[in-house]
Amino acid sequence: MSFAETGETPYYAVIFTSIRTDGDHGYAEMSEAMEAAARKQAGFLGAESVRDGLGITVSYWRDLESIAAWKADATHLIAQKLGREKWYEQYVTRICKVERDYTFKRD
Image 1 (tube, rainbow, N blue to C red):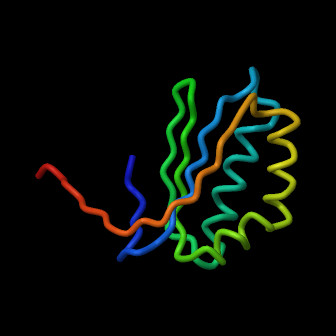
Image 2: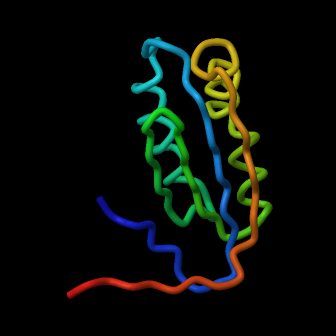
């Protein structure tokens, strides 16, 4: 388990909070493919994700243009469509500007 290495502020966070449908229906495979594709996108800084009933994935981006390009990516558009059809009962996407961050790590 590790944190995304985002670099200096400011940058942007896309917070995707979701409730899944029952069953996998190809979700795990697509999730891995989307993570790999996002990592290749210009402006992608990293991501952190957890799921325990409610799922939260936060991806970090250099700017709003990078987020818009990822949203419009052809493979990502397919995943978005399948998400609405098969994988999610409900989701919310929030986009935030990160103006400041700080870190603590026990030695």
